[in-house]
Amino acid sequence: MVNLCLLNPAALAFITFWYFHFSLFTSHQLTLSCYVHRASSAEALAEEDSYSPLAIDHSTTRIMFHPELNAQHFNEFSKEHFPEKLGIVVVDVRENKVTAEMPITKALFAPNGYLHAGSIVTFADTIAGYSTLAHLPENGKSFTTLELKSNFVGAVKEGIVVCESKPEHLGRTTQLWSVAVFAKATKKKIALFSCTQLVIY
Image (cartoon, rainbow, N blue to C red):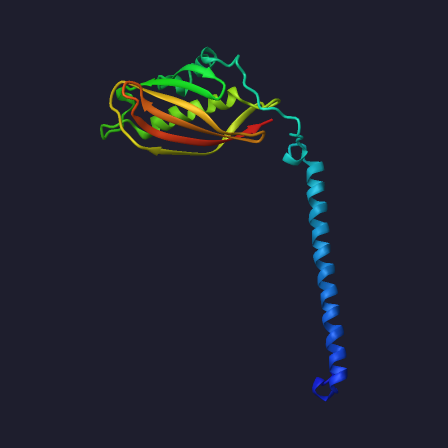
């Protein structure tokens, strides 16, 4: 091993200069190799996996409203399923808005004497789901929920509650819907609900 302390300043500077240049060159080579490897791996996965989002061409996909999916359609769709058990009835379906009603019954109450939060969330989530189906993009088959949130801002113990949905984002891959829940008689807000839906092709 060379003792650097015995070298004159000129020789020390020469060695230092080439050492750092060699290290920098090697580092760039390693970094470039990593980028090439990652890019190649991503391309290979996209080619092998026919279900990969990279393999879906959304460039010409159109967001559509499907008027044939009207209130009668969704009420038939609900039969013998959870929404029907809660008494949920869709009353109007139009572009960018779905309206539904749910009568308040004792079966929807929590033991503490208030309308169960789960019944309100189910009501709002159902209408957000039907809203998504009525606005699926061209070639869209169905959807699944990625996230949902509900803020409770009021309470009601009798009468009928109403849901009204509106889109916050209608994309080719995801949709974001907000739903207002309020008392039909007084228009008092009960909950503000939102959810993100993933479109399935």
